Image 1 (cartoon, rainbow, N blue to C red):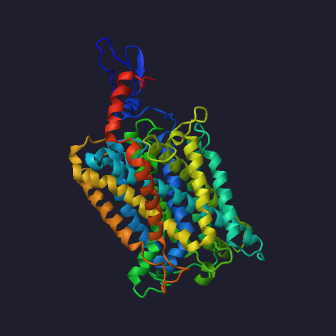
Image 2: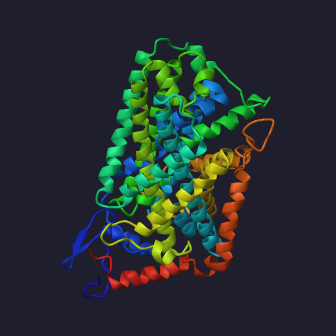
Image 3: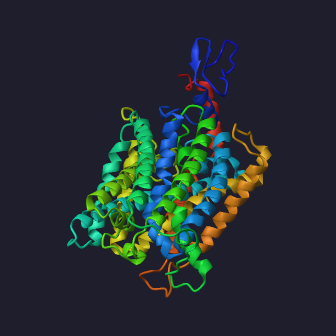
Length: 526
């Protein structure tokens, strides 16, 4: 890729160009300057990346799955105003991620940023720590979505067969079926953008149908005071504020995983512009859909709330549909729309976790990186990373058989671990100085600084407050085991770091040296 004078040909940063009869891919050039080759094909458009990002976060779906749990810890007041609070926090998180994704577009996302921005002495460890927390968070998120799908499927069957008594193993089997079913949608790279776009439209169409249908057919409606001013505390906590915070975990879950789009940076053209659009679009659509969905459902609650919360289907939103429609087939149909949306969410979650696993393995951050870092030449996906991650999700599902509370604690852990993975590169950025790095097209200056501070403050808040017990008196059956989850993740990570990672991890200096070789070799020529 050298011209007659021996200089390396460089393309403009925002398009491809012809030099000496060779087509230079600007995106691949920028990736090569970071120390990576273009292994993935850039098949995604901004809409399909948004489809992956929103299908994963899918805030209104998250609210539908966690609505009743949240109500028990704060009532409709928690959900309605909690969504506003979390949306504001998520806007700050989205801005922080978008700035970094625009300045340093790379599929590694937050672990790559930490490696580039941290002081050289700590860069490898900070990056390694971030990568493990991010990947663990993605695994736990997939598990939580698979559980929501399993519960919904079994709940629909129970509604149609009232004598059927749901056992934990029924939900476990449905969990595994959902995980396996969604696995296949990520097995062929060329169709994945179309699948992502389809799941985006499926979610929005399902949202509109449910939003209109349920309040339109409900025989009675709740008054505005119930929707906007009712606080319910069934947690046993005498302090209403603590009960509100405990319930906020459920609302927060509906806005988690905003980093998803950043890990698609090597599969879309002009990622420095497209990824921020996808991230901020996810936050905006998530807020609008989840807030109006919640208001619509609360107005449509028929009869005693405790009947819905204690439904034998174990799926309160399904019981709400049935009470409003007074028709089992209609209620199941609406729940099927939620299930279809949930499958889209799980497919996107598989995409997310596989890209995280693959990109982290490229830098030898995981055991077995020799295989996990490979991209299948025919399927155009990191197949081994995808398969391995889905196997881990299947194994994590076994925890549900042992203890639902322990599994629920893992869901809480996924939120906090992801926030920590966002916070580490932001801390590195602030230490280095926001103006001491090249800015991307998306850079908000003082607004970005305020967003960084909000992200760090919220991360500290969640580490402390989300560790509180879910209810009182504290028993083994309702204990918050999130600290135990942190310990297990950190224990596995520490063993790998001391036995393998600290010697083999491919850090900043290694990548920069290899980048020079890549640029000299001319391998970025298309």
